Length: 239
Image 1 (tube, rainbow, N blue to C red):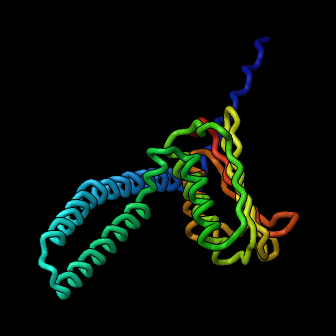
Image 2: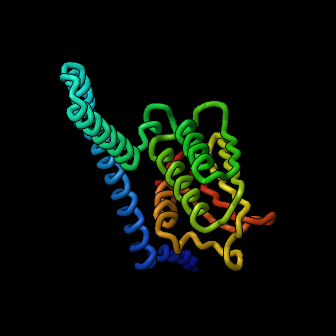
């Protein structure tokens, strides 16, 4: 009497179309964000290399012309007005470069960029700040650095707009396999203690970018009051 053949193992369940679609959209968003970052970086460099150099040359030429001008009060006043206008254009160009791309992130590293963002925010908003970061530069790719900086900037922007806080605490921890950014304020907190980051497009965008890197972003009420923004990114990007 022959033994019955062992039953075949059931085939693996097919991935749900909605889940597959969400995965495809997440990959597409990640790719678009990377492309947009590269474009912003390119535009910022063009403003610095082309327009910045031209403005510097114009400033020097105007200074030389002013020295050669006759001592006519009307001409001297007009030259002073031109110099002031030129300085305003130089400052506008600098601000546009910074809004497009934080060059400190590229040339000085994410640690310096994070520290300066916190210090500048505290000075502008008259808020007490404390920033605790590793002593050494964070060991992570540029994509992680961009997400960390954007998360901090969006979190600080939300604090300034909604939190009514008087103090903030920024902490970055690094382990061999993970980088975690925590931003806490002592403000009014969240309504009902719920994570409302999905309803804010700035943080929602950062959350998508963190997910593309295999990480997470959460915004919760802190037990001691205020809100806590947490971003955790794995060192190895999830495939």
